[in-house]
Image 1 (cartoon, one colour):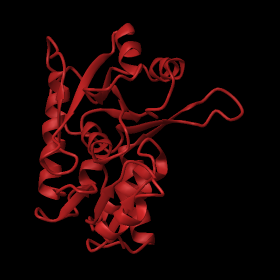
Image 2 (tube, one colour):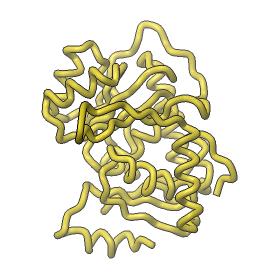
Image 3 (cartoon, helix red, strand yellow):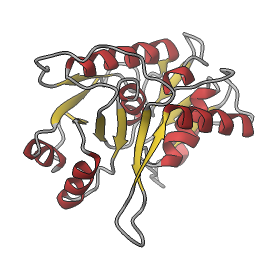
Image 4 (tube, helix red, strand yellow):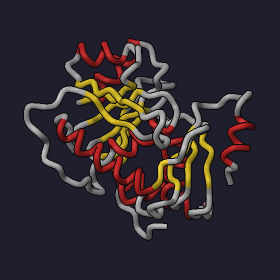
Length: 249
C-alpha cells in the first residue's frame, strides 16, 4: 500500500502493472497499468475540451465499471460531481446550476434529460463511449474540442477532487467539496482499518454517486492494490452468481 497518498492518482500507484484493478461481471478486468493509462489519457482529453483543475465536471452514469473509471479519471483533471442517473429533469437542473458545472460526462447513447438541461445552460456534453469488448471500465470521451486548450497540470492535494451534496432532508441540499487530500486520506485509512491488501477483491453493489461506494468500496480497495468488481447496482436474482464469479474477500 502506498505510504502517503495525497491525491486520487496517488492511490492508483499501489497496484502492480499486471494486477487487476477494475472488473465487472462477464468482463475481462482492467489492470492497474491500463487504469493509470486511462486516467492520464482522460485528463489530457478533458484539457483538450477546455476543462481544467478549477472546473467542475458532473458525471451522470449508471452503476458499473465505467462509472468507477470515469470518476477516477476525471478527478485527475478537474473536480468531479457524480449525480444520481435517476434524477428528474428539475432535479438535474438544480444540481447542475448549483454546481456551476463546466462539463457533463454521460453515456453517449443516454436519453437522460441531463443532456438537454446541460445544453440549455451551455455546459459541454461529453459522451462516454464504452469499449464493451475491452477490459472493464475502458472508455473514450466524445465532444467538441475547445478553441483554446487548458494547460496540462497535475492535480494537487489541496485541489477539489469530489463535490457532493447533503441529502436536503431538512433544508436545501448543500455542497460539500472534498479535496484530493481528504479523499486519499479517507481511502488510505479505511484500507488500513480493514487490513486490506493487494490480495483483496471487493464486489461493489453500492451506488457510485454516493460517498460510501466511491470511497469505502472503490477508493479504499485501490489504495490497497486490490480489485473492485463493479456491478450494475444490487439485484437479488443475480448477486449470488456475481459472488460466485468474483469470489470476493
